[in-house]
Image (tube, rainbow over all chains, first blue to last red; front, side, top):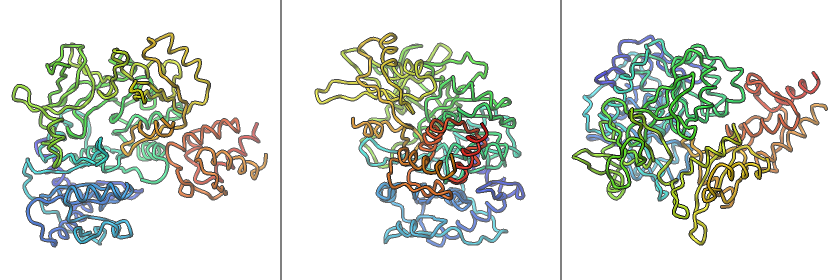
Length: 497
Length: 82
């Protein structure tokens, strides 16, 4: 697929009667999507914006929000999704950093008004659309920013990651190059917050082939909503975060989704044991583990999982596989040289999906990007190694690798041994320097109220003394950050550490 | 155990799980009415309720809970079917 955005336009113009979205139980055709896009484009045009602008979208679970994405892209602008449920100060920081003058909102209540100011105009997008109007489409310059996502920065100020039209179209092309057997009759689930880039695959890939997107409602219990949607609408393609199946695990015996064709996981470490159990619930599906940072557009490595077992894994965590088309993953060792097979180092990415750099953040760009043999690489901060076949295993964040008494300690190894003992409970090991700047390890066990001394004994039997946790803490359910990943900072705070 | 007593005992569990002593449960209380009732606390709450009443819910049963009353009725029928 050379120009995926043009394919989406084609489907809007040609596949008029086919369903494009199913939102809160209502189906919307490609023609309705197109009319909604055209309507929003007219309103953007009436504001007389010059050249390429960053336009904000307040994200809701409705057709207008999705149509806003394409109204902005097709008009030659850049979209910046903003979740009205996120803290106001964070959203204000994004509006200011991205110099957003125009904000689209399908709801005009207090939330939108709160963002309306002298510098930001709010355009209401839920006006009745003329169903015969079709979207305008200007030629998509490859270097223009398609979207900017803001991720949490270590300093506490969100940092912007712009991705260009070329980045986005390269991802979508490489996605289809993976050779999925999918067509316009397929049904995709979209479970992600629209400020998280996995949402973009979840709604753009189906629209490229004329398929239908089923969105998970914001309200209610997420993993229950995901399951219910997959069952009720016989979803055929699902990109999920691993925590969804962790929550569903007690009910696997009752789950049987025959129509599922592809089950992809991304965003967190994926454990082989729970994945193989899940495979039994989806007897006709292929399973893939995919990996990638926002900085390299959605995801860029894939590993096909063998449902019978015998997969490549490290500490129980499935391998992340190999690069997609037009991408190169290289592991650099401590000396800054490409690592040998099996040698650990930092995973660095080069290729068409890599962002041109953080939004107005020269300091961060100097740290995160470098040139090696005239190729530009992004440092992922992920500690990895590749085997002789080129399959990459994820070994944890570089930050999670600590030196204790001179020994290099990987927290994932401690977690793996703890999991041997506590079985289905999730575990997280966190290292922190105490007042005397000595590194100490804290081990958290989810939903665990039992005495921890037997677990400590098991660890003493399996790992060297310097790796033993200073404390084992049984907690309730782990707190998650806005991307659905375990929030280590909050875990430590809750434990008063 | 009658339904009122089940509701009273659920209230104690909810106060603990949601770390809020002000929780007041009625038969028509939903997730929207209780601060902090989300995916994470939901799992903890179900685990705690199952343990407390020594019952086991099926996925279809958990999905059918539209309010606290549905859960009370389900617990009641499970306790009295033994």
